[in-house]
Amino acid sequence: MSRMPETRRSPLLSLLRTLTLGIVFALFIRYAFTKSDINKVKFFKLSGTNNFFDNEHPNKTIKDFPVKVFAIGDIHGDFHNALDILSAAGVVSPVDPFEWTAGNATLVQTGDIVDRGPDTRFLFKWFDKLSTQAEQQGGRVIRLLGNHEFMNAKGDWRYVHYGDLVSYPEPYIENRKYDWGPEGAIGDLLITKYNVTFKDEISRSHFMHAGLSPEWSMQEDFVNSMGHDVLEMFMKGEELSDELKEFWGIKGPMWYRGYAQLPTEIACEVAYNVTKTLNVDRLVMGHTPQFSGIRSRCNGQIVLIDTGLSSAYSGERAVLRILKNERMSIVEAVYRDRVVRL
Image: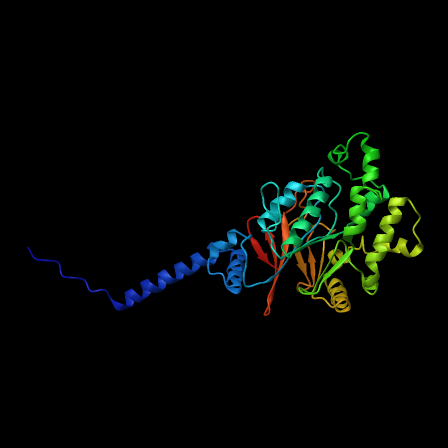
């Protein structure tokens, strides 16, 4: 019985087979990785981390960046959602007593802790403890005033959650009024520990709740003192001067929404001029919800961080993270399951 002759593989067929496999593999890679995945790979290449799967753990320390600034927007009475995202970002421990874990980092909370949720009192106490713990590790917690803090000091309780009210001993209303007054625990915290604006010189970022219009940016040095004047006058039931009425007006620092709502061309012109006036690279603010996540406008000069994280809104839970070393700055949105470069 004769043997079948050996078939020689044509060099041309081998080449075609190799090319076909290469094309199939390239298509697989193209559709297997989403745009956000590609951004993740870029980020970890820049940060010097070789393990791609580190992105699944955004609380990992990134040693190449000694400067770390975190910012969280409107919390609106929801401790659990705030804890969830701050622990995911590596700022606090997820287990009781929920302590500071971010070392020498900075955390900025841009106001509106109160209203719409039941956990207001606990949140104020928690941020006060975090501030003390951060200082012990060389870090800091910057606490800013939102329009809802002013509203409650003024006696405007339209958005107060029932759970917040009954967290006080009876008589609920009288005890809550005292707490928000100049001699109450929350009132004293707001007057002594909270400001309207914060400028971080190292990350070249300006933080506040709503925003400074071009006119108000010229008075930035006076905004914090004016804010405290308004706050104390609200607590005492006193009438505001015309100048302070403008501070509290719709175009004032506590209500301005231009950076979120103006058409792109106008918003970018305003942001360009205001960043020059303030000598910063970016303006970071809450106030106007961006339910799909942290939003960057005008090549990063505007960063909107109110994501409606409270269960009253059911928006995305997110924290802004700014990383800086001698060579570069990286600005990111940290979510529970991903990190997105802005």
